[in-house]
Amino acid sequence: MEILRKNILDTFKSYVDGFCGIGPGVNLKYAHSLRVAALSERIAQSLSMEKEDIDLAWLIGILHDIGRFEQLRRYQTFFDYRSMDHAKYGVHVLFEEGHIKDFIASSEENDVIRAAIGEHNVYEVRGDLSKRELHFARLIRDADKLDIFRVYVMYREKNINVWNVDWSDLEKQSISDSVMAQARARRLVKTQSKATFMDFYVGALCFYFDLNFPISRKIAWEEGNYAKLLDFHSQNPESEQKLDEIRELVHAI
Image (cartoon, rainbow, N blue to C red; front, side):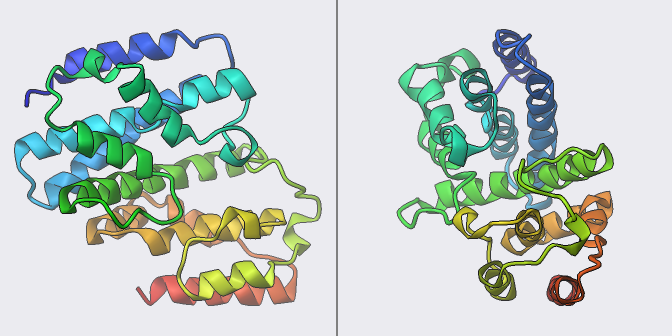
């Protein structure tokens, strides 16, 4: 299977350009896709994967959020729970509308690409994936989270309310017991459990628990973005105690 990177990048840029003018989120997701592709490649290289599989991991990184652009056009949001499942829609764009053929001629890895993109945003990966599909799904999930740390730091530094929930008295907010229970279990936090901005913030910190590969944790610390998120301190004594507990859980891994 031949992956022609320049052709793929040109085709992807052309696709994204079709959404220009609908907001700054387009450029944000375009840059995110390029970053995730590079991170996917790095993770794949660290695992000593074959060149074709490294290229495939890179391709999945480029295409993993292709559903985001139509989501933004239709709903003016990136929140799936307020709009549509962007991963499922990405699978629709690529395989039901047939756009995968715009990027790669061969269909031999279609099942892997479909599974990885479709599962990259779920709470828990399906149990019926093949070993190969699962491997690439885990890889893209790690690469995606690593760049999401960067995006969250960028939003925080620009004082942008990324989750669009009440963040008045942010430093005094409580952390819900159900959210903290999931953090203590070193699990991802379910969206329906989150009520406050701090709940969403803890949910972001818990992404670390779902990283699958040692290199992913290494990159998280190396880039420094996760450390910046982890260094947030609350003026609410109970919340700060819970954040301290999360920091201990993270450092114990």
